[in-house]
Length: 405
Ligand SMILES: Nc1nc2c(c(=O)[nH]1)N[C@H]1C(S)=C(S)[C@@H](COP(=O)(O)O)O[C@H]1N2
Ligand SMILES: [Mo]
Image 1 (cartoon, protein in one colour):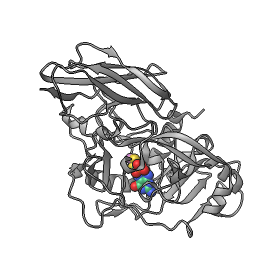
Image 2 (tube, rainbow, N blue to C red):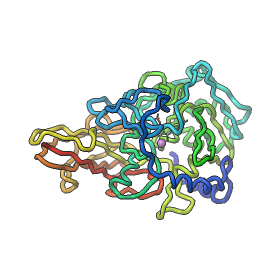
Image 3 (tube, rainbow, N blue to C red):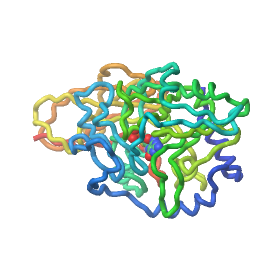
Image 4 (spheres, rainbow, N blue to C red):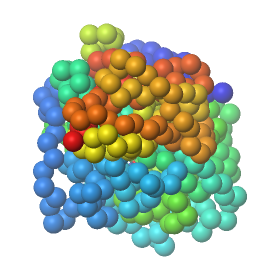
């Protein structure tokens, strides 16, 4: 069992006491202004040298800067897993073109008994492999609704609900690799770094994209994945090797892994000090760190869809929670006045999602669709998500306008 809250609180104490190694608090405050001033990032047209390699046709994706979100309408009539051609992409900079035949992973740090260890892809493929259905979801998924539904100003990419996907990830348990590398009994934190270009923001080079986790999580359910839906990892999703960290926010699942540091001391990076913290009037000045995702639901359609009046349609959707499987999904087709239970279709795997459906015979006019999920722990989506300036963890029930004519 991983107690993320205890880990987050302990690291917050280390951080505020100045015991942070790897990234200083001064950088944090210098940057806070730059980040806050950035505001919502509009979506420019795609440049010729796109930061994303795969095609992004408008029927499958909405492009937002260096990122692309899946259109939920593109998941209708698809299977349980999101096909690679429509899986969302979140890039801090751009997709690097890495050569799998020369790729090499370095594992090093004060948490190892001996020297640095190096592995190539063949080494990794010789180790026992596992395949898991796991959700990858950006912590900012749904951020746009803080503004459009709650009237709040937040900074960061204004995602709808499409910064999420479930795939079959095949690879080696991180625990297998770390144990072979030789863990010191004092090993405490583990941090993977990406081989994509350094992230520069507000004029400051923050170095490679990286984020620490406690050794207990690294040894629990984390994968070093080299296949996605039965194919070698595609360039945009971490080719040749990425982390897959179940239940945690997407930033934990570092793509294009080049280095893994195992430390006997607490580790910090900008991705757990200045980003991925909850800032705002409800939170402590230094922000509240977090790692796990929340409960969410989405209809497999675009807002503004027009149906034929008086004709029955089958509404479909998916719900997911970081706490475990979904227990029930309630749907309203009248703006939240009355609710019906959606029928579950297919499996509800821990760490993935539940598909559901419900029939709807719309009268002519405007309607508002809502879906509200409850997970096995009894956690239900709220009416209002907790405001935080960086717009993370939007878990409120989303109001989807549709019409019938
Ligand atoms: N090296 C690296 N890893 C990364 C990122 C990145 O920009 N660089 N983005 C992270 C974030 S914020 C998310 S939400 C997920 C997105 O994974 P995907 O692009 O495969 O959907 O990758 C994570 N891993
Ligand atoms: Mo993310």
